[in-house]
View 1: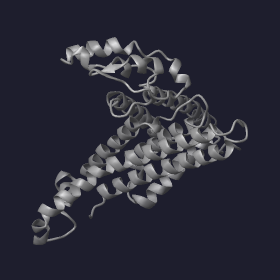
View 2: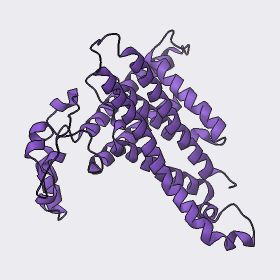
View 3: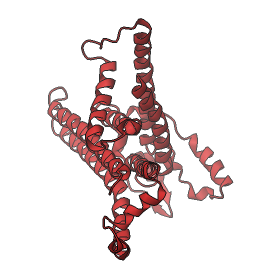
View 4: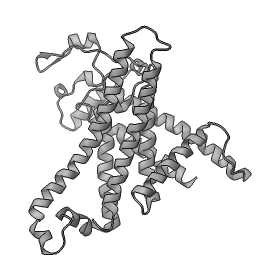
Length: 317
């Protein structure tokens, strides 16, 4: 129960930060191309916008144009001219990844209420026997147990402290990835803005955990390299840039790996769906492959997060 509450609490914070980050970095990679009507009329810097295919989802029916005047008003207070704010960036197409992340947040809140109600009932009745069969409670408990078991093997010390972050990442990425397999929905991890936001959260937090566990002096000392004695300071001019580059590459590798695999899986599924019109049987192998990719990419992102936390909080480097 304590683990579940910690994971759900962190999930809300993580998704809120990630949704805000994806909205503020939406110029990096649009979630979907604007509609053909917008593409014909859009002009940016005197150049016509190129036409592109629109990824249809149920979220396209959500009106988002009301955000443009809000952005203009906020931009005016910050000194950003109206001409620099593209109205086509405030449509359901451009903000598709933000809408999906918000939907995932609502889905997780619903799951937390259902499972939380189940735990309260267990505490009242004193019956702690697990549910039989496949239930939502068993699904949540299984993920938390798997994540906690891997953390014990990889981090090896105080792993429960970091369960809220890693468990939250596992839930967010898994649900987002699986959502893209449902017709009419979309996976937010198919967009670089989302994966970069998640990677930056991991980047900031594992440094924070390292400083909290070792103190800022000892933590920064490992950037000098693994050597000891005088040689450590002699090699520092070489080792410090190498360590900095390796750490800065981590959010890039985390975000690009998840984005590239989910984007590729999504496109392969779409291509093969267009080759043969057998909608009931033909997609099944590709749905199975997509499910496998969704699970594997969740594991990879979570495992790398555990490794980074373990390296940052280890007493000896």
